[in-house]
Length: 342
Image 1: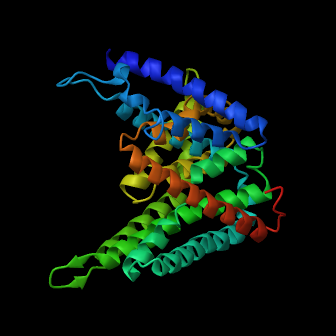
Image 2: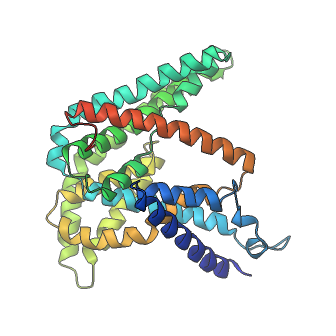
């Protein structure tokens, strides 16, 4: 069976599994996104490992592209579209009011997990460099799941939602800086000892990229969408907005050393400041829903590593989820909101 037919079959299987799992979890009063994650775990190497089924395996020596690799690309596109829509639906005026709380919540979300993780790892017998690295891993945040959960419960434009999502994005950037600092501190250059050049270059690239996006982004996006609105054709503004999104996502990761989703989220924020926000939002939200369920499941299904490694990833993800629950409480307290609505 060629790759095209495999993709059609796998898309059908994945959508069915995700919708059924999401509906089941939703009836239990839990976020639908949890059901989609569980569907990915079941379909992935941990349980069924559908990529190893005969129907998805190419003959030895075949030049066909792996179905898993195709889905990995679709997953990246789905994540970028999700974060663009999240930025598009974010209340920028509310976010400006909660920027201080979001920053301190993000700082706490980096410092506390890192310190606690390093301390516990040291107690379990790891060396201090290893313990610090383990603590650094626990600073990782899941911006996409945070955004999707807030969208599902209709809290993205609330004060608590703006604080939580803003803190998650800041946490993501701070986490990359801390990780680069730790890695740079353990890289030994012959004859020079520990190198700080990598860290300095990385921070400068991030700073230049962010300043460029925030300084030139608003007028450039307004100008592009204004011109696009005068063009003949269907959905020219939406096409222009998506082009901007993919370019900023590319630039954030390629030039700025950040995650592509950071650029996508900033693109959504920039578009939300224009008069085209509502027109673009209606169409972009529908486009995003086509790929949205896939990124959660393909993160597990598309990874062709061993089942043992997958179980380790699942356990680590569970630990990270508990860490995110702690961050949720911290961010809700920082924003002056009660825990329940947050």
